[in-house]
Image (tube, rainbow, N blue to C red; front, side, top):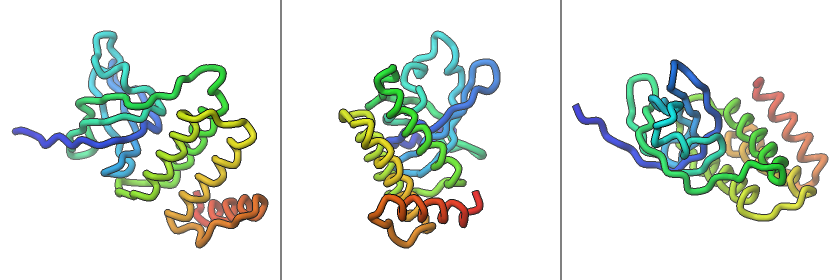
Length: 176
């Protein structure tokens, strides 16, 4: 029986090893929202997918839907952050935001606004030369935009302290 292959752009949020050579990936995708996809044999040296499946890689993914989760059959990296000493702060900002997103989103549901916010954050962090002083502001605004999109905030305050207070209140009200 032939399965339909779905193509979508996405960003790998996290991964987890299972079995001898397999790995699970949480990918926030443009078309499906957050999906959990398994990749068979991807930890083997000979795996062709291996090089395109690092955490925080933005790419094009080919997935097949199965009963419980998605199967990853192909991946092509389009943008990968250069994880080195000079990009450590950018990586930490994206990691915190990705972890927050994974906590806030349960199940699959396409959300174009969250996809846009995540992609804008990714591009701003890894494609531009961001000043260290601007990183915290970028992270705070991204988290506020995610909370607003998910319905936990009515509006995004302009003031820094008021914004942080509103974010903390929204997170507390979400009970996560």
